[in-house]
Image (cartoon, rainbow, N blue to C red; front, side, top):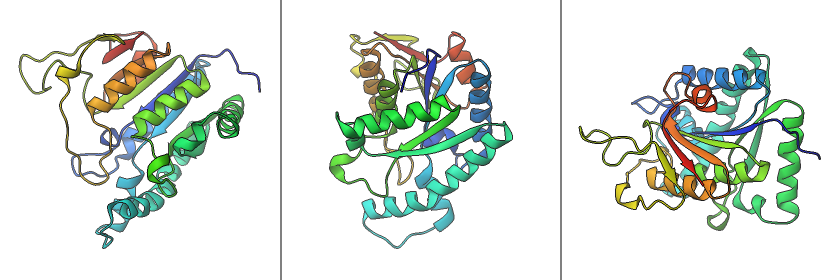
Length: 259
């Protein structure tokens, strides 16, 4: 299938963007993300959405779970939560006169050969029809050697797969800081190149079950690796007004990673 020459943007939305302080999915945030994607569509810019949130959505439905095995518990939560997330996205995109589709994947699907070609055909077919692909890891069937590190890695692989012009990683901070975001003398690093040594600014973050696997360290590594493939990457606050539109318009938002 021949790739169109329209601009392509991959947007990854983390669990912390989609939830409130009580770890509950906030539908108005989803609506605002869809609104911005619809606006890009009107500008002939093609979008792929990588959405986390299925595990938290499943926990909301099931409440306490008696399964002690962490991997199985994640499978159960995700299996219950994923259709709930897709129903919300389907209804919201429909409200904007648009169509969306679910694309679940494991790491194996990006291996060279028939698997990768199949994924390319899937994405190209959807984009050609004006359908927004919504990707997530297939948590229900993934095993350890076919799991992504997190959805940041999945987003990077998708961006490379479709030849994206830009990858936007939306999180709950305004970008990559040179210290703790709450410290008074901390500032956002506005631009990072692939060769910059910034590991001293990365701190580990502990997350509870369902809160997402990727911390800032993962995001920065993915961002630099992706930028090295000539795909511009932004890390920005997904709850900021018009964050996606402003980034695509070239405004100074978040942290920009360049080759």
